[in-house]
Length: 362
Image (cartoon, rainbow, N blue to C red; front, side, top):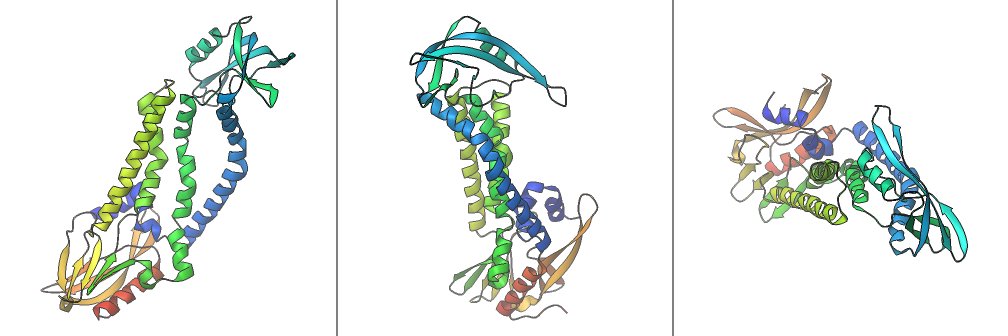
């Protein structure tokens, strides 16, 4: 197994972001499209309605008026999950008066306590609200019975957003993966949909080994969570600290996107057909091969190689590689791309044959 094949099979994130996934077989693209539709429906029909009101109320509570209340009950509660991990919460009840009317409530925050495996932290909250003590109560001016003790978005809320950021990214990622396949199926672009830049007598055929937007989205799935884990651990950071971490995280993603974009636009992965000098510049490979230039007279054929590969679990699958055959002192073959769609590979190979004036390899 050569280095390029190993990299495509073993490096999941680059494979998912690269040309292989971009040219996935039709069944694979349809499956991903159906998953994207299901996930989008779940997100907007179930996830958003379930969690959005909590966040909206918690954010709005920063402007709630206040009154003085009295604590009537205060204790730490706990529950264990299926793995035996104990999580803690607070149960604090209080009585308060608004406009001469007495209310009772037991809400500490609209949003749940985050990372409440921390007994000391929840105990400190209860210790700060002993039974019989007075406390500041924040109430909804439109509905005074709706009240809480801890208003505003805090650092833990922002950490929770970063830890679950992958769920927000997966949806556009799922739509992005089959998008090019849908475009090719509907519009049937020339040359299999590869990007072709015309510069006078020079044709630049862009054959990138990765897609910047997909690499950035894949990184965005796990990077925010990693930043939170290593930056904050089990602590309860301030809003300012989390905002700084968010700025650093998104700054890294922006830099990553433009670095990938710059690498592609540098032309390293372009197939360059120069009609004036009658030469063809072969693109660099992801590993090993540097850019090479061959004369048009040396090119004997353009073929589509059918490659059988095996995945990490032993299953076999086919890919189709448009290949340039060069006859110099010895016969050489240069693989230009490696796609799952046979029709796309054939369309690109046919376009390239017309440009180079050669036939297929019988």
